Every structure is written in structure tokens, then in C-alpha cells.
Amino acid sequence: MVVPALASVVVLFFGGMYHGLLQSLGLAPLQGDPSFTFQYYSELIHSQDFWRSFFLTLRISILSTTFSAGTALFALYSLFLIRTRSTRDRSVYFQRFFQISMLFPYIVAAYMIFLMFVQSGWVARVLFNMGLISRMHSFPIITNESFGWGIILAYVWKTSPFIVLLLYPVLLRVEKGWLEAAKVFGACSFSAFREIALPMMKRPLMVASFIVFAYTFGAFEVPFILGVTYPKALSVYSYQIYTSGDLSEQPLAMAINIIILLTILMAGLITFITASSNRNWMETPWTDL
Amino acid sequence: MDRPVENLVLGLFYMILMFSLLPIFFLILLSFSGGWPWPEIFPSDLDPRAWKYVLGISSGTWTSVWISLKVAFFTVVIDLILAIPAGNALGRSGFPLKGLIETILMLPVLVPPIVVLMGLHRTFIRLGITETFTGVVLAHVIPTLPYMIRAVTIGFEKLGFQWEEQARVLGAGWFRRLQHITLPFLLPGIMAGSALTILISMSQYVITLLIGGGQVITLTMRMFPYVNGGDQSTGATYAVLFSLVALLLLILMDLSLNRLYREKRL
Image 1 (cartoon, chains in turn purple, blue):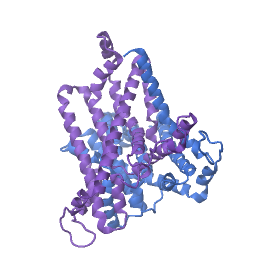
Image 2 (cartoon, helix red, strand yellow):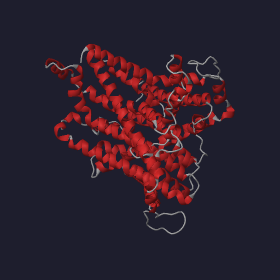
Image 3 (cartoon, rainbow over the protein chains, first blue to last red):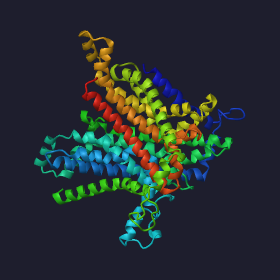
């Protein structure tokens, strides 16, 4: 009964990927005879433009994932405080509230960040009226600059609620009794969070962070809106080569895609290995995601 | 940590919450502004000009809303046709390679669409379905199907076999079993999966652009030029409209589900 679904995924998803792989290796050329070649990969490896794009994308993804996980952990600690401080647990409402930004598509999120943080944007206006900046141009350029702060902001805004969503159920499994016990031993709320909740959350946090990394490393819309013409994020770079009209360049775009895929696979492997090496001391039923 | 520090943490958390909602408020304000000169914090000139343009017939917004809904609807239908049998198998029976198959079905969540898209584009060109509605729907199935399968599988896990078995022992025919047992168990999952599918399908830009070749103009496609450097009020209006349409669909689905359960029609 899984066959129809499996077949669709294989044909559409793996088919698309496979075709891209073949083309990047010169095995499915649009003109001429197929011949196996690493030419396109070596062309990329020797291209400075490619490496600048690659490291830009890597930096954006790593920073987005780190800030997003940091924000999520801070939110979770706050929810933990809200939950443990009063007898009625109101943390679920705050959690819902925090989730609102997930309803907005990435394009809209990118646009909002643009409008808020562009030099003539709202944040600059507020600072100006408070007398903190003297002119529009003294506000730092955050959107459409080559470091990618705007892209990172948009990703953190969208993905930190996602991490909270995945980890909040784990927080709910921390029982009041354990916290009582911690208090008896003189633990404050922060050490209770660190010693009890955090170890439980460690593996789901790694999985969630990996999902965020994978998404931000290959996503197109946000860097397309908030990025600059040079250097481009890998996905944008690949898309523009593909649609440039020069058919002989298309295998290059496919090769970039395969490199995106390989990077994500590597990150997945690292996550998996780290997660399973932590297993021994965490092998308790409730640490499973 | 003592109380004052905790209060500080909570204060900061409330501030982050507020700040995370600020852009939404700002977007709505911008959509109603005529001009908004520096350094005004609130626009002095409120003008529904952008809304008049966007909601007017000439802008093509309504056609795009309709196309978006149609694409989302057919994506949901195809997803359901594929996900229900798959969820049935994954949710309540064991078979060889189950873990592997489950992983394969979930992979599209982790692999960015752009990696798959160009190869798919070439295949679709050969099949002659680029620049068509069908092509766009098929392409939307890729990023949405994993969520639908996951949601439906959870429904089947809860259903198991014993409830239907018991109803059969008590003499219920297949229709009454479907109506009173199977559907009530599965519907929340189906609804959740459909809601996610609609949200994801409506938000797609690059997939629709490449496979649709600019011929299938969904609301996102219509919105994009304004969001990417066009008139800001119009861009903001489209963004608000888009979010409203998505939100409205989600609320409608939630309400109809609740109503079905309240009236015990299921």
C-alpha cells in the first residue's frame, strides 16, 4: 500500500535529483554525446565566485541555526519559568503566541525584515526619533548587504518558533516532582533547567537544528529578496545560471545543486554521529524525540 | 538564580515576543499608507489606494487567488490519494524495510526543492507539462507529501485494528464502520495534513516559477514583483492579503472539523 506514495516520491523527487546528477556529470547533455566528466565540478572548484557563494551560504546557515537555537532555548527557559512559577500552567498560551510567525510564508517574512530594517525602515525611524541616530544614513545597512544579516534575521524570525514547537513537548515531560527534588537539594531554577530539562532536550534540539540548517542552506526565496548580486547564496547562484539561457552552462547549475545536497548530507552525518555518541549517558526512554 | 534575575529573563522574553509580532503590525499599517515620508513613525497620510488597486479587477488578484486555491486543492487531493494507503500501511502494520521506506518518504523535507527542481524541469519539458497547471500541481506534491503522510500515519496509528474489529463483531457494515469509526479517527490527521499542504503549496515561489514558466500565476507569483523592490504599499497589501487568505482557510477548516464533531455527525 506504500507503493503509490513511494513510486511518486521516487519518480518525482529522486528522478529529479538523479537527472540533475547525470547532467552535472556530463551524462545527459542537451546537445552532443554523453561522456562522463568531472569538468563542471572542477570548473566550480577553481572558481572564486563559487567559493565566495559557498562560504556566504555556509556562514548564513550556521549563524541562522545558532541564533535560532539560542533564541529558542531562551524562549524555552522562559516558558519553563512561566510553567514552574505558578500553579496554573500558562506557558502553553505563550508558546502559541510565539508560533504566530510560522503562519507567514518565507517570502512575506523576508519582506517584513526588509521593511523593518532597510535604512529608511521602521527601526531606523524609531531610532531617529529617539535621537539615537542623526540621519537616515547613519543607520547600518542590514538588508541587501554582503554579510547577509537581513537573511539571518528573517531565518531566525521564522525558524526559532519551529525549534520551540519541536522541543516544547519535551519541556512538558519535566515533572513537578523532579523540580521539587531539585529544590530540596538547593538547585535554583536555572540549574534545574540546565540539569533536568536541557539533557532531555539535547537530541531533539540537534535534530531540529539540523532541519533548520538544511533548510537555510538550500532555500531560495529569502536570499533572493534580501541578498546582493555578488556574492549570491548558492541556490540563487544556481538558479541564475540555470535560467541564464546558456544551455551549455546548465550542468554547472546542476553541479552546484549536487554540492548543496552533499553539504546537507555531511551536516546530517555529523548530527547523527554526535547524537549517537551522546547516546550512552542519555539512553533513557524519555530522551527520544 | 534568584527572583529578580528570573523577572529580567521573563521581561526580555515578553519583549522578544512583542518584537516578533511588530513586523506584522507594521505591514498592516504600511498597506494603508498613502505616502510615508521619513522620519514619521506612524503614517500621517492614510489612504486605501493600495487596497483599492489590489482588490480591483484590473490587478488580476482574484484570478490569482483562485489559481492558488485550485493548485492547493488538487495538491491536497493527490497527496491524500497517495498518503492514505501509505499511512494505513505505515501506521498499523509492520513490513520489511519499513524504517527505510519511512525515511525515503520523509527525505523531501530535508532536501531543498532547488536540488530536485532543475532535473524535474527537464523531465517535465520532455513530458510537455511545463507551463501547465498539471505540472505545477505535480511539482507541489513533492514538498507537501511528507507532511501529509506523517499526519495521516499518526491517525492510523491511533486507529489500529481493534476498533473496527469490535464494530464488525457488533454487526456494523463497512459504511457505518467508516462513518462512525474510521473517519472520526482519521479526520483530524487528514485536516492537519491538508492545512499544512495548503500553506506550503500557497507559499511556493521558485517551484511555481520554474515549472509554471510564469504561465501559472498564483498569488505568490503575483505578489513577488512588488515584494522584490516594487511599490511598498502594494507589496505590503499583497503580503497582508496572502496571510489573510491562508489564515481564513485554516480557520474555516478548523471550524468545520469542530462542527462535525460537535454535531456528532461522524
